[in-house]
Image (tube, rainbow, N blue to C red; front, top):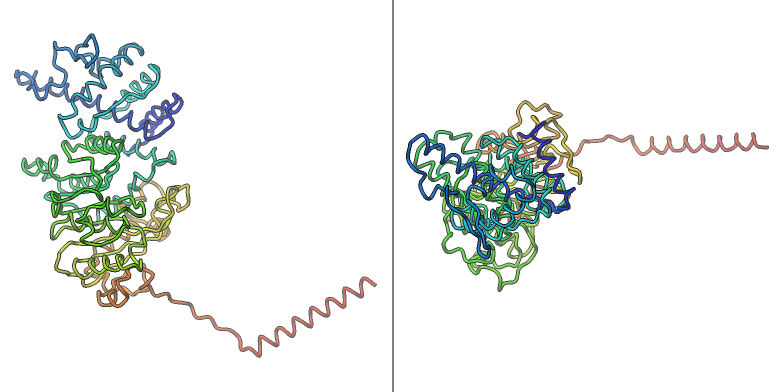
Length: 518
């Protein structure tokens, strides 16, 4: 968690960009990502040098990022610079004008040259310094250098805090799912060390980061076994997006959270063929963008075989079913229209989830969760791919509060320790402001005590037969029973008598007023 002095330092860096003329928060985040990547390269080189000094062995060529005694000469430049001049620890101490020249004309071309050397480096293709002045660059470098990011947790927290400022700026918030909602979904899915996890609309990679942090916390021994560690760093995480800025930011988010080589790649998930990814994943966590309709010509033919529609919200669910292997599970956010839409495609997709797969649960989210960017009502869809059915009871939960106000301000309603799905010891009043811990606890009891709850409660289970009889309607309001308090009224004769008395009193008052005025 970022607090106190650390938060002040990050705010100073961010505000420096704004006062220096860069007001687009995504551009600020992109430039900070480039600089953090350069800083990370220098740290990697320092680690390699320290290891070489301890062992007496030379640095392997593949690990020698800045070879000593060699020069880097960008294409089109008459002169080169020693590789050591490109290191963060070197240029940070130079005068602003010289630092600017090195970073713009040598460091950034160097990043592009290394684009094929790792999953993180490949997203530096096209990297361009847009910081306009040497003074602003110096402020940014000095500010980042002052931020203490010695360990993985702090690095991740710092980057997450920077990402939160994108949303706070009121722009591009669609790229970022609230982290407490991600936490709830990850906890519900409980990722395992052998999972293969995908987010087909990864954005800043929040879901993948959340899953990685869960595995580290709940299965720490898994990362100490060579095979499991190799899987965690090289095979567990895949994320796709078609926005290059998001790919850079998402890849850096994974790197700073300690995932060495995730598969973060450019892909239009709805438009490309997925033959190589069919049934490749055991867990999908996603909040895909729902842009309305697509042209048939631009839609992957494999998805249209599942459900014939132009609606992106339905096509994404079809994509999830195609990507999951049998036994794979998913927690994905969908607009409410998916749950009760009346078109043939809507009904068919819901029928597939209920009859052909195993629909585990629906969490109805309050309409303000994604404000101020969107007030659309959404829900978390939880299901398991079986290809042979398995739905017996479907668990529903009516999430009414997430710890923040549901208006455009999204102000915090509780102390920091009382927020999120893992908050403990909430009072009844605290629960009224934050339902997330209760939702998680009830989800874990869905095969036990939850089965006995009445339809009048905040959560309950509905038999598959009843859902089928309702044309596979999955909206929670379709099954919620509302209990009205019985109110007793006086007999009509007494009410009429009371009205007559009131009328006489009014007339007498009018007569008394007239007498006073004459």
